[in-house]
Image (cartoon, rainbow, N blue to C red; front, side, top):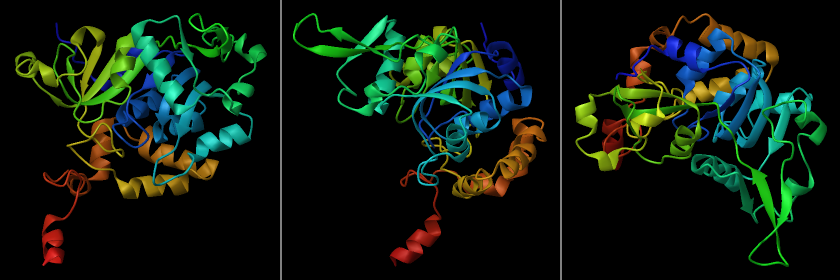
Length: 323
């Protein structure tokens, strides 16, 4: 059965107000920006974010007021912004419930979700403020059904009676959205390069949307199953979205759009400029195809990876410089 859908239909069907949502990718790598833009257009809100290492994807949703609670370890467009600006403003202004786990623990929590574990015992974070201080109080947690009542609890190590460990809650993810290089109509996905936490959230989530650079036949993707990352039975919707990770990079396909990230760093400093940015690049753009047309073919071609380099570059210029 084909799971291929249009992006607007996949978002409308599988993203609901109040969902616990997790996105794939890592800060400025393979983030599902096309899907994020469509969520912004459609208006879904009140998300509980299991963000992992995030960037402009969650920063945009936070700036647009769509996030009720944010569970995170790091939010920045690495190399362009030390801390994403709308995220920072929301924290400083007391507008966002946010819980902070260390990056290793957050990634392990997502892996534990894929394994179906009831909770995760770790020794990480012990001796730091990450266990001494809570971002979301117990009182606030009790008001939101989809938040665990505790950030963590200390439990006895059953194999070493005199040692305590930290037991952290395992996320219960409603919807996961990942962007991959290759997918087939039955939902099988091929991720080239680092998988980050994408496989974990695809396995763990109740609903999974995959956007892809290339849509190939079921027969083609099965020719070498050792290259595949996510089995089709985990996936609910497959959407063909070339450049669906722009402005982040998509390994082996295209590089970061440095100019776009630099522009976003400037416009996200002030709320009014950020709102103007959303109007120009999201709300007044009908769909992803119109977004690509707005970017322009020359700009997109200039981002294509050059084989042998692994990133976008002017090969002729490089050769001339070497001489």
